[in-house]
Length: 447
Image 1 (spheres, rainbow, N blue to C red):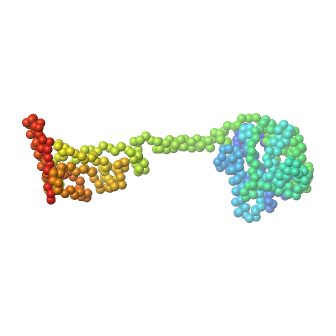
Image 2: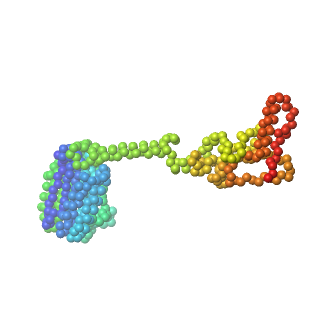
Image 3: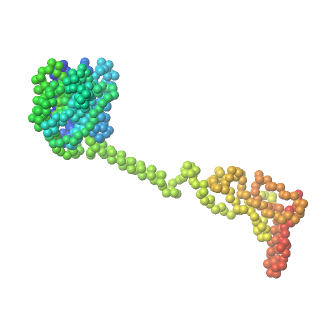
């Protein structure tokens, strides 16, 4: 089994306000993670006992069952804040508990590393090769005074005589925690780690170090010896004293076993859930990537993609223009010919109007602000030579009427004469000296 033991002494107090807990990650694996908790209650009228017990109970439950982080330091601090909130809620439910609080140390051994989070003046010690060292910060006024002693601004006697030396600068009280000391150190073989409440301050550090050096191989014997030494002092106002002692032995980080109470980033439920989340993320990324970068032509374009199409997209070649169907009762118009008639009409460049049922609206560089939805294909009128000087200019056509080829009787007669002359020339094969104006088209008749 893991070499760890905890023990308490009530001292000269009426009730025990200290609390401690030792939680092994696995009872089957002696090298598994080890969580050690300690709290020193304060507040009187049972408030101190309630605060220390409640803090450890909530911390333990959250750390094992609900903590989100797999990093030891983050997990320790997260659980501490949850425990502090539980103290606040308890004070709100019972006003008689107002003023209660406690110090706190949560230390976890993972493999060959010790991590801790502490608040208040309870001490976390490391005994290594005969030297006793305090690891965590002292959040009492005395701790601050001793820092001044180290800087030469105050004598040790003045610090120990300060009337408020035992006042705390930070504690678990249900309000915002002012100071949290959270750090990690590597452990070596035969290192001894000890958590202790301030009742142990009755003993000088030299005596504590001597006891640990003599009994370091047995945490149980070392704990009992220290508490007996405190009791022998018989201090009239001796406070509660609690110690938790752990002796470290070399060993690789433990593997996940079936009775593990929690995992710290290794195999187990949390890692399995993380793997499932990673797979889902990859699948989602692939799907989004396909939607965003799919090749052109795949899928159905939406309104947004159509609006973003480049304005210079090639316009499909238009089919040959066909003459409109004749209107019943109107004179049929012969097919348009170019024999002997110069054709200066320009090809149509307008596209079907926006909203056409046959062709979608496409904006082209030729489109302008004047090309309204009612304008059809523009066809220039056939030019007719003017033989009458007094003939007035033809009035412009009505744009509201449908555009069509010219149907003037004179134009039809000219076309017929031109066709007959051409046929005669082909038959005789000797019309080389025919005058150029033999097929002149007379001017259209005046109204």
